[in-house]
Length: 304
Image 1 (cartoon, helix red, strand yellow):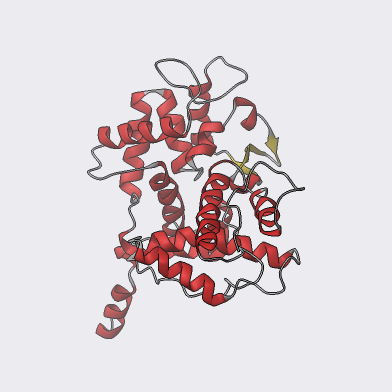
Image 2 (cartoon, one colour; image 1 turned 120 degrees about the horizontal axis):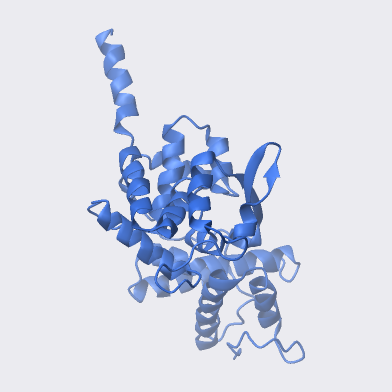
């Protein structure tokens, strides 16, 4: 059976059940996630067309596992194969939820196991984070504001770049708060502590509205790519001898909060993770050797 691989534009009169289900699934996402899942579904649709399969109706778990094997045979790394399947698995999951198919053929499909040493995740320890925040303020007020939003409030690069002056103008129950729209278009409200507010106000200057963080040279609002470049510059100036990205700062905020004794549930709220298991990944990745259980066990055995 030959099935067109076109997902867009939306033409319900001529689209197959699989295409309509794909458009419905993709409509849940925006920006980068939408484009990523659209690419992944195009790959799945194209593979089905080459193999005479409908991409949705009649698909069995064996077909999904054959597709996974084809990705492996193309030379993709195990982690890339797992990533490529995110859109496909979501497509089938929601088609099942919406009643388009009777069962989800991808839910039990075997994926490659991705082994990672979570203790080697690149972040910043407490002293490095302190140095990063201090050095950022010596470059420009815009670098300082970006560093604090990433490293203290655990914002993502796109979220920090999108912060407007109006977003932190309100107070709630005695706390100055920052309102933002996060991943998946989910609104969030978080407190702005005095040190963070001081840095944000220095960046704001005499302005009363508009984007907060600007490009120091042009005065135009920064975007996600600018955030990466600014973080790289700060890390170099701070003498941190490895690659540091905006996510490294978000990672540092979460892991240092856990090191400071913040309960896992509160760290999940800081990170705005829908699934607590995601926060648990950060907990395992802390790599805090000072608090490693071996110290307590050694003291116990020694009778100290």
